[in-house]
Image (cartoon, rainbow, N blue to C red; front, side, top):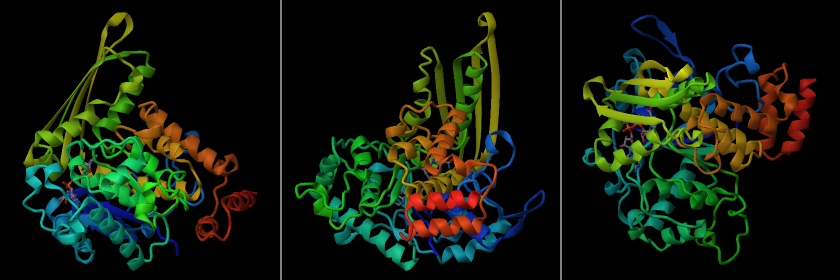
Length: 482
Ligand SMILES: NC(=O)c1ccc[n+]([C@@H]2O[C@H](COP(=O)([O-])OP(=O)(O)OC[C@H]3O[C@@H](n4cnc5c(N)ncnc54)[C@H](O)[C@@H]3O)[C@@H](O)[C@H]2O)c1
């Protein structure tokens, strides 16, 4: 059995425990009481996990539409946290899910190992320091190189312990960090700085997790808003840099053995709620031929992520990604304002308000208002799941870093690297995903007939085990279509 791995940095946080609880609920097919009805486990919101619904452009949902899309039920989930709180207890504490569901998954979650986190207090808000007692110390924490080595060992040990033989994606779902001032012009410079322990270089924990992921052949997804990704970081994930036999003067040699497997580096900051809707709403206004002039938005919530953002140094990282979303549209006169407020009483149940004022016919104003209320983690977890499932799928289908970044741009507030110039419109971005999927799988596979799941799994298994090549798999899938 090939299993896909999801390693979450910050697994004890609201997103981490909600993802794990959802996976357990689906795996055991649980059902539970809610104030309105009895609910059973589902993957709503995860586009990779729901079967196509509707007729337009094959409908919404990709499960069964493309061969080889992994089932999130079969993923192995693990991760690190700097807090020691058991995961079932953390799920109870965060009050995201219904108590009747929490009751059913709590014990199993309490038994999941939490690996000690690599951290640097200067990067996150003071509000997080008191609970940071589950951290890497001693010689594993003695230098940047020792920290990267420790994360790499953690990944290897975890893979072995859980028999994870498929692709692993490491997701930064830990607290937002302040921006790092370390800048490198090449992966060699980045690796050398870590090797020589240039701690004065201001290398953030998220950069260390990303580098360790690349060296282990895991994809890395930056779900937070800090500046972890850079051109040098993307180049480190590029297979042409991590060749099996890198030149002797290449900094990679200092980190041998390293993986030359395909892996992606994606981000930045999940586009989960208000920002996602804005990119769809403004696309709509523009499609009407209106000229958006003012977008005034606010949101308030009271979760731990928001508490961390009450520090100026971390808030600046969040505000950058929240405000900087319409750049490629070059709407020069657009006045886009964002305010966020910390309101502890409402916990994770975020409220967001946005007023859009545009110019209509003869410059007459057109104004509309939206109000959304939802648990923040319910918005974000499906994106975490989908990003890991897409990484696995794109790795197995030999999709380039450029195409993977383009296809997943819809998941991030600020698509980085090769996705930088992708249109910010939500539906346009979904079109990019479709395009990459068509290119990766060939037109024949998006026909009306869907393959049986058993066929898909077997063919994909053959590719992953190296028994058949991607080209042979494509031919087999073509045959199965007939
Ligand atoms: N929920 C959403 O809708 C949403 C949307 C976009 C982005 N995000 C981002 O996702 C991340 C997680 O959100 P959350 O609500 O789960 O936050 P949270 O505060 O509940 O959880 C963060 C967890 O990270 C841990 N942590 C901090 N530094 C760490 C380190 N160096 N190593 C390991 N663990 C560390 C903390 O102890 C905490 O348990 C945040 O960066 C947030 O901005 C969330």
